[in-house]
Image (cartoon, rainbow, N blue to C red; front, side, top):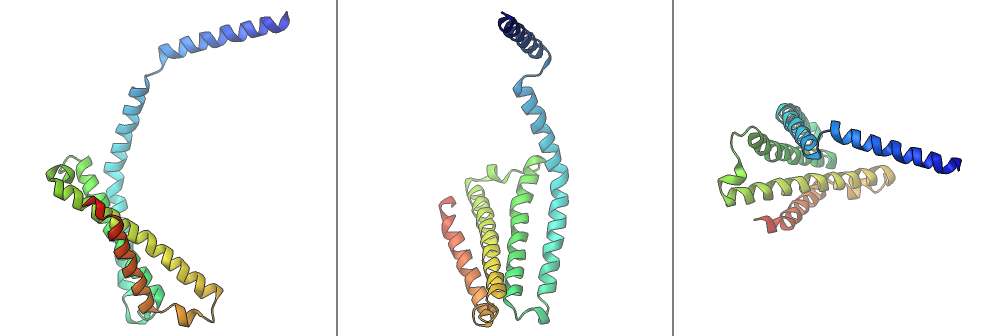
Length: 178
């Protein structure tokens, strides 16, 4: 008998909590709207900072790795091309979205061609940056784990060739967007 009383009390109590919470809480659409507004404000104010810091870092990598003493290594090739791809990701990814969020200009609505080109370039340079990082990681893996074969395998010309192949494959992968 005690068990049934406890169950009855728990059932009644949870019913009171449910009815009370329904009266005092906001609907899901109101909460989602508030979060979307907050996310938009964060995007508008933080994305220029991310763009500036990222651009500055990538430009510094391009300058430093472009010096003569760094040019003869596969590491320099990968880092320069990855910095260039990341810089293009920042330019093609953040700027159009920020301009749209600020309601300055919406590239997607200008013309169907500009929309397609924007998406193609953004996705292609994004894919290229990611796969250059993978190739660079493999290059460093070979250099660390197989130091005797490093000079035969990890060459700047080979790195350039791998990066060109990565760019071509990324273009082919995203060709359906155009």
